[in-house]
Length: 144
Image (tube, rainbow, N blue to C red; front, side, top):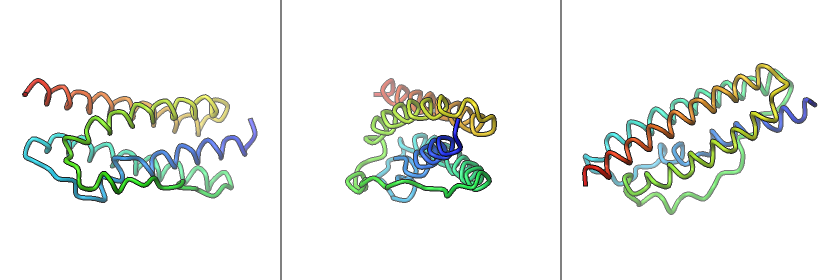
């Protein structure tokens, strides 16, 4: 596997973590009710993990002689005025899509041990956060 392929996949992984919907929402103030506190807590853990992963991925890219690329930001401003509870399903859908992207990156990185380990860690965290988000969504549905 070429170093260009490794760097391209690592930068794709970096962009995914840096430009995610939860990271965007952490920089805004969506409308919230008391019932949204659990959603906010789960998103807080997800964002903290993504920021930690981003730093580790960027460090590896630099160590390999590459330039970290946070990716092109999405236009998510239409989400600014929506309720956090309403956004929960969108976050779940994005998290599921991101898991597919992480799996693709992991497949590209299998021959580079350190990069593969970071991608595997990202995948495990993403799946865990998706499960937590789905549990919160189910609890909200059951409460209605």
